[in-house]
Length: 417
Image (tube, helix red, strand yellow):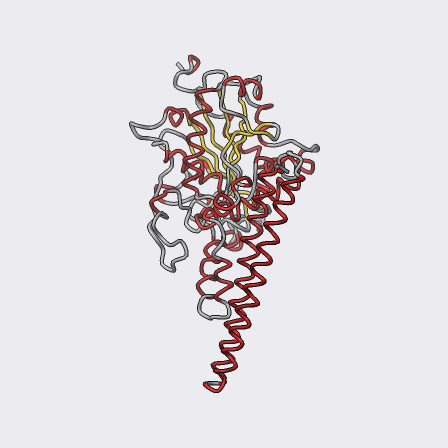
């Protein structure tokens, strides 16, 4: 661990522990308050003493916990070996999860632990410079397939169950595509707990730099997104002005997008968490739990309706009971769009399949509607699989490969004329 990571881990621990202690105090005060109110005015003297003692004790506990966490962080900084925490496998997983569930908190309180949008190869960031890209991709092709992971994941998620599905570790859609097609696969990592629109802007800038510094001229871009990754891909195209006269040059190279279990119309689990928060706020005893629930990240809250645009959240309370503004961002004009969805039920068309979906995303949300609707012949449905099977299941890859093999040549390809 680096010294700045250790210090920021201590700061993060101080905030989390102090917050947890505050919630405990609020529950205790709510329970005691109900009891004192039941007794009536006769309990006033006792309540005054109770409140004074309780407030002092809880303040001391909060101070002690926060101070202890900060001290531990400073002590850790003194003995840190300088190795980034993400180079340890278990720590990488924890870092990805923390950046997904509380990414905005990490950015504000523990920036050394906050991830950023970056191209990744061999477990390391790849600077968007010609020399660095040549070293990372010595056999770079003019067709580039960009893969974007989902919530609480990082680029290693594409190797999910690779030993089970492909017989050896390290196999992913990226490595398979490079073997089966004349393309180069690029893995992008981003902090999934930030707003989708923030990640969209960051990925748009990333793709702009990637295309400009790529070792060979890029003639063809394919965007593949799992879950939230599909929303980030759409947001990036929107942020870069895709389909407009002022669009960034890279958007004109996007000929295909593929989303795997992406909640284009929102995720039912996040909507349930939103409703639960409002129910819990009705009673003083459960209000602290609602407060704790509301600390989930901005990225998670964006999944409620598939929010892609900053105007839909800027200046609005994401925890308000009423639905705020929602901008419909249509599918990018000028490209083909495909979607794969799975259902836990073996029959995707069954009532149970439509209700449960893949456990996190329903079929209706995965295929969109109106200006967001994917063409029926561009949707592939699989049964008996859950949300994370979409990352590596051979049947998903077979369909992805079929779509990308059967595609028209770029307009500037001599073979197309």
